[in-house]
Image 1 (cartoon, rainbow, N blue to C red):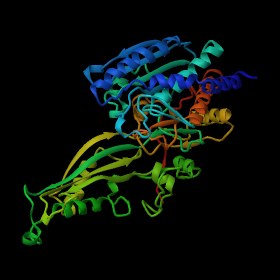
Image 2: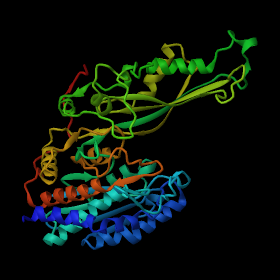
Image 3: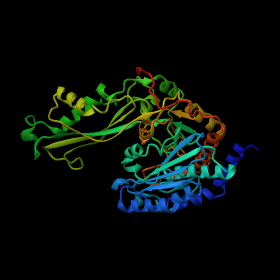
Image 4: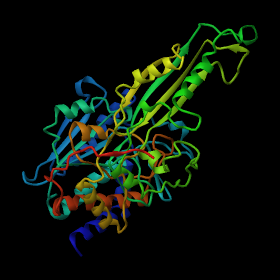
Length: 476
C-alpha cells in the first residue's frame, strides 16, 4: 500500500477507534465564548492546556498574544520550519465559540458535554470551529508520525474572537506579516455545499449593516384626531426600505450592486445545483433577481435583507400614530461592490426620493474577498480532494456568509483555500450544534491527503499565483 493510501487508512482508523471522539469531548468542554469575560478566561485555558501542547508535540515553536493590545482578541502562532526551499502553508482556525444557549438545547443535552447520538456529535464548537481546526491538527500529527517530517513549512494561526467579528485580526496580520508569510492559505470553517460533497471555497461575501430611522416626535397621537395631518414614521420607513429593495428582494439602488459576475465565477457556478438539505426551508423561486440563477444569487450577487423593522407595539397595537420607526438592514455583498460610499449613496437616494427625514447610520462592516477560480492552487486542491475521496469535489467561488478571508487574501496577499469539515445543517450558532461523524472522518482523510500532497507533490508554490482580480461580465 502506498504511503498516501496508508495515511488515509490511518486517518479513518483514528475516528473509528474512538480517539477523535475522545479528543472532541475534551476540547468542547472549554466554554470559550468570546462574548463574555468568563468565556475569554476559558479560551485562555483551552490554549494553555490543549492547543499549545498539541503544537509543541508537532515540533512547533509557539508564540502567544493574549488579549493583544489590551483588546478582546487573543492569538496563538505556531511555526515549524523544515527548509527554506520548501513550500509554506498558513493554516487558520478560531478557538472561540458563540454563546452556549444552554437552556435551549433539547433532550437534556449540554453545550459543554459531548453527546454521542447516532451519526452526530452534539456540543458547542463541535462544528464551529474546534472540531474543524482539530481535524487539521490531527492530520498534521498523523502525517508527521508516518513520514517523520511534513515536507513543507507550517504556520498555524488561531484567533480567539472570530465570533465577535475578529477584532484586531487585520492589524495583527499587518504587524506580523513576516511571521505569517506563506505560499498558500488553507483554512477550515463553514459548511460544505452538502454533507456528502467534499468542498473547496475561495472566499466569502462581505456584510455591512445600517439603520434607517424616522424619529419624528416624542409622543404618539390619536390616529382619528391626527390621521391625514401627521406623517407616519412607520409608513415612511417602510417606503424608504421599499425604495432600496422591492417586495421581491430585488435591489433597486444600483450603487448597492457589483459591476457584474466574473466569467470564471459564472463558469464555476454553472456546475452548482442549490438543493436544500434535509431540514432546510424550501427556497422561493420568485425571490431575488429573476435574471440570475439560484447559485448566482447566493454566491455571486448582493442581497439587501431587512433584519428588523419596528414601530409602536406590534403585540398590542393602539389607535395612535407612532412617533418613531426604524429598520435594520444588512447588505451581503461580493467583491466589486463599492461599500466605502454606501452611506453617501443611500443618503443621496433618500433625499431624492423625498425621505430627507429618514436618518441613516452605518454599523459593523466586514469586507468580501474571493480567489480567482482560475488560480493554479484551485486545480491543485481539487485534484487532491478527488484523489482522497474518489469523487469530484465541489468548487464554490465563495460562500454566501462571511469569514475573515479578506485578511489572508488582501492583507497578506495569499491564495485562499477553504476546505470545510462540516455540513449546512450543523446548527452552528444555534442550540444542538453538531458534527456529523461521517463528515469528520472524511474530513480528516481529506486534510491528511492535502497536507501529504503539499509535502510530496508538485505545487504552484513560487509560480506567481497571488490573489488577482478577474474580468467581469454583466449579470444577465
